[in-house]
Length: 251
Image (cartoon, rainbow, N blue to C red):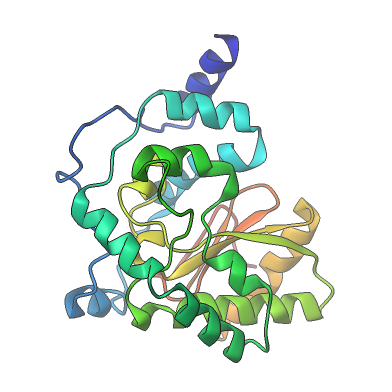
């Protein structure tokens, strides 16, 4: 009970909504659409500053940076179940897993990080099961091949950071469709579009080094957004709709 109260207190302190159990998820927009309208929206710069919205992603980083016990407590608050159509999109992406991995490997000289792109955050496995059921394969590949260029470029960026001696631990988020994204507390305008990756570095100081290099890449228009979670983790928004930095400012 003490741990659960601590988790709830942290969510309230961060200004996050408590996630309630809901039987039907049709009320939530399915961001995994592959329509041309969605693809066009990725190229429109939204003038609205999303710093406050992006801070909601900290819920997923409670899973990452504190303990799995808190992840379980958050999940105990309830989650939105995926609808049939939402599961269909996930399974369509899953059917393209080998195709994606082959493309990523070819374009990154066989990088092992390609394998990490297709599996959701391991520390959020309970939330994944709650969303899709225990029999669902723990993989998420955006079904629209047009989005694949974003995570693949993200891997290339990591290769360049690694070449500079920056130590990288893992990629732990790429595509987070609704309602899984909502259940982990993610912002609506980033991962549901498959335009970004989250990366954990060996330490906070390594993440700070990476952030400085990413700022140079953003200035050169190689990526559109950078998020700093105040820890060893960074958001790398290669094709994010909104071009900005949050959590930390580029000098």
